[in-house]
Image (cartoon, rainbow, N blue to C red; front, side):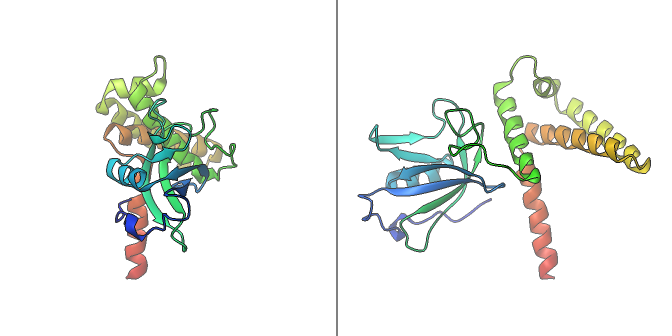
Amino acid sequence: MNTIPLDASRLDWSKGDGLLPAVVQHWLTGEVLMLGYMNAQALETTQGSGNVTFFSRSKQRLWTKGETSGHVLALKSVRMDCDADTLLVLAEPHGPTCHNGTSSCFGNEVVPPLGFLAELDALIAQRYVERPEGSYTTQLFDGGIRRMAQKVGEEGVETALAAVAQDDEALLGEAADLVYHLAVALRARGLGLSDVSAVLAQRHAVRSAS
């Protein structure tokens, strides 16, 4: 999701002594992840680095979410409200957002079924970086792209066979395996399910306009 950077000069920094509340939402599911505060420098750093950065009122300095835990919030877009005094940040979380280990600082919300794909994508991205020992996902990454492609092919065939057999339970199970292995292969190429979603959305927009 590429957007034009928000011009800080358009914002009203006077109301909060140079700080604006920034509501962070999951860019795919819409789940509210956290609330932080940004000054002009934090906004500039966020847009420049691609990782959501706030101004810590307690530490009186900039801090990038996940700078210690590694659970960063990858910026997708940022926009202002109608009064230009509040920011809405759409981000892709890489791991739990809350220090308590939950996806949201407001507690775990009920995520729509399709929204779990975003969580799966984030978890696979985390596995790609951390490579925990004993993880099947780690084994796939270590096996190389040919092994991953082989698994995608195998699961694709099994999904097709389940569909032909009209076995819905098997179809769902094989489809889940296919999506998982496809997500792993995508991540190995530096891509994710979000990129597939973007392509589908673009195709839909083109066809709707024609």
